Amino acid sequence: SFFIITRATAVDITGDSLLHGMLVLAVLWWVWVVHTVVATRVRLGVGFVPALMVVGMAALFCFALSLPQAFGTPVRWAVGPVVVAVSYVVLRGVHLLLYWHVAGERPGERRLLLKYSPELVMSTLLLLGAALIPPLIDDPGRADLVRDGLWIAVVLLQYGAGLVANAWGWVLTSAEHWTERYDFILIIALGESIISVGIGGNLLGEPVTWRGVTAAVLGIFFTAALWWTHFD
Image (cartoon, rainbow, N blue to C red; front, side, top):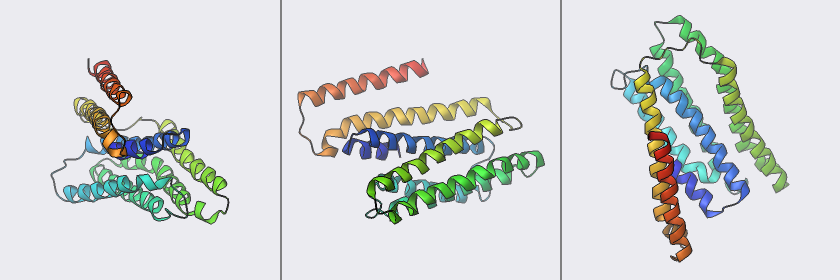
């Protein structure tokens, strides 16, 4: 997902494309937060859990594949945004089922899940709206504004729900495991940024120039600085 977002943004570096990349990253990060909450409680190799995780992985893969089309021309790329919305529903549904299963012995935790059910339902409806409403609007500029506005509403709803519901009552089995998972996702993000720097010229079909080489070297330096800042 990180790599595809970078590629889609690099093809057309504009303010709108950077906004779209940030919106997708924000939605992905919320999904990752939910995943870490579930993964710290469930044994991934027990019972039906591996099968559900494979379903979640497939949904995330479809989500990533359709990301470049999520903000394309509504009429031309009508399928991509729908795949994004449906994949999101499946992925969140997998997390919900897994946590409902592991929280079976704690009725209080199941009640906590109900606090987040409005966020799940509303964010799903907003993403479906962002996929289905813009193609019905004749004015392309207005259609783009409606789509972007619905995506912004998804992000505000997700993080707003997290602030309102807060973390009181959730059980954290292992603080070490929790922080380790966040370190892993940062390592993946930094690694993907290096890959993107390395293949950027070939990906866009541009010839190698001294400016490109300079930018690539600076990209490595900046990535190393981010790594050093966090892990040291």
